[in-house]
Image (tube, rainbow, N blue to C red):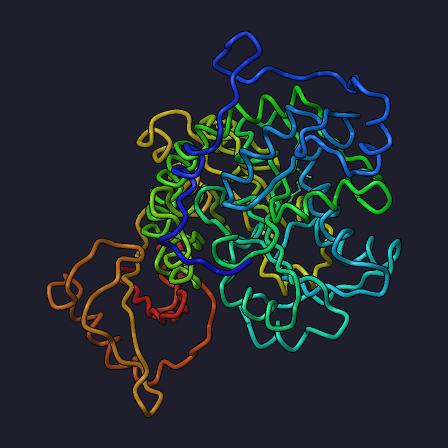
Length: 502
Ligand SMILES: Cc1ncc(COP(=O)(O)O)c(C=O)c1O
């Protein structure tokens, strides 16, 4: 699909134009067609329907529920409107959508280039299942490294695959750049948009196929397992091919009653996504002020913040997922237990997109398919909590509960450090930039600081305090043996933390 850019497509407008179906008796909602088999008026039509030369799109009636069902097709049209593609179809799970897509696009001996930052189940499918069972191999790459993506492509590559926002590390894929790379070699670009429905519309940035786990935000109630595949009409139809279609032959069919439920949730998906995002941004900003190691695409410190700014549809924020590194598995467990058991802030459970906040440690759960080395390479520390931000309670109440849980585990509420952005001069010496950053304390000009003297003394030492790439965070307890200065990379910036008090 050709990249169209940001002005052409808006999902709410597209959904409003999608042809609404009314119920059989004039109901405001489409009726549910629960039948698995359908009568044919003329016996002579049967063979043609089987061959696919007659189908519902060509005015013929339906045949059998595994291939086509009117309620499932209605949801499919909604999904196409949501993603701005020619066609869409719903299946029984997100992994069914992903595996059917790969199996349709690749034959034995073919090759996939995939982001190393993907959901653990997708990783296992690509790393273990597809090579062992189907002879389809995958090279995993850092999807932010476009040269590495190009270098991994071979003559056998049929698919480039990325998650628009990755699970759990929140890497933002540069969709138009990746689409260009794939299309230059005649390769299909497949994007998993589970984390960012409404927020990012991958097809308008060049994705050929967009897949979803509808189990997450699209459902919104953690009560349905389902998946979506959106793309060109001929691709969607090929999934139902009688001889080689993976939906037809492997049978990951969705129940029409479930399809109908999902249909009723899509009209308010945009409102829900905007609210998930509003709260997630507020949590991320507050945690960052506290000095926490928080990743959220809406923070300027996020490494690909500029990419999501370019890609996102403006009304829905930056998504409902953030990660918080508490430094150790034990601290992460304490934080989650306190948040759940003391405050009912959220629930200690895997998955995401629920109306309540969900807290899980990716390393030992949804990314446990990755080895320790693979987790390290993917940037998943054991103390990392993935938070899927919910919609219940007031924002103020939830912020208070969150920060109490965090500070109870991680120490003093106000860090005894002040943070300042620094740059390196041409001799490699660190120099402060003019303004203070607010990591860990209120924003104050340096000169007005009450500890000007000690901080100034530290400043003069800064020129040689060159640990450069040090990744450690400032100590969170005001103990006197905490180091006087620490240097940390925050996104593209370097920040020096100066201890204010013993
Ligand atoms: C990004 C992503 N894609 C796909 C899946 C798989 O979806 P499902 O559980 O619906 O099969 C998940 C599940 O967590 C996911 O997070």
